[in-house]
Image 1 (cartoon, protein in one colour):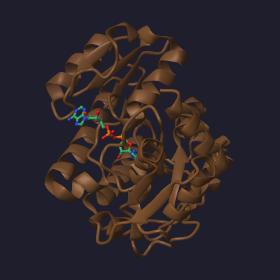
Image 2 (cartoon, rainbow, N blue to C red):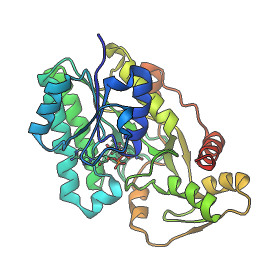
Image 3 (tube, rainbow, N blue to C red):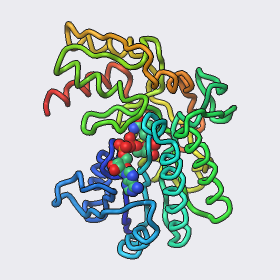
Length: 314
Ligand code: NAD
């Protein structure tokens, strides 16, 4: 069967990269980028639709027009912004997901991808090598919207046979797109500031380790999970996914090797510190490795070299 793919939230940090990768794989005309804002893509790149995922009628129009075989739902409000607008974050993150799951159920067979996050863990989750199954008591709206979303995904799979697949993304680092209001945004901003000004003030403290991943690995993991035979996808809530864990100090030291003279300082009392302190420092992803063969390609030095090389060439 030929694929018709819909990416909702296509203009964002992950969407811009995912649409590009999907268009290379499936052909531009088969990948519909959709977002509430004007297209971030040149018109010649492929189809674009305005859609508000909160509006049933708009989703209905798109499902009728394209009959997608795969839907990637990336529209969400992220951790730091979500703490400023808690009810809006809950509303968008839950209603958007349930709308898409309902349409996937009605228009079966449709494969759905929806990202959860390391934010679904909380202060009483084990912080080192956080396992797939453990106490999860997230204390941000974003975090508990992700945990509830995971339960909805498993529910729609078990009750209604929806082929929904999900990854608990770590913090994501890429050079093509700007981050969208998360707690790990520092790890993208630092590269821009290093090249433009030779210095950066981190809003997280020097020793705040967090699980992170280079965008190439994220896209690779996402496509690999979506390509896996259904019987290999044994977890229908969301898979732990590990890449690299590092602190701002370790990242700065690696950047300094390639940007001589680079200096980092640390802000005090940023509200994002408390969010980071409630998240895992590293993740165990043995289920993803065993079930569908996950293996990241980038370590810290490789990621830093690739980021700097690409940012210098823009
Ligand atoms: P982003 O904020 O960069 O992009 C989200 C996109 O959704 C934006 O283009 C926005 O215009 C669009 N959008 C917002 N409301 C919409 C609506 N009502 N209808 C349609 N589109 C709407 O986010 P991102 O960083 O690309 O994240 C994508 C997904 O990955 C989210 O679910 C996020 O929680 C998850 N995630 C991201 C990270 C990260 O580090 N970026 C980490 C873990 C999980």
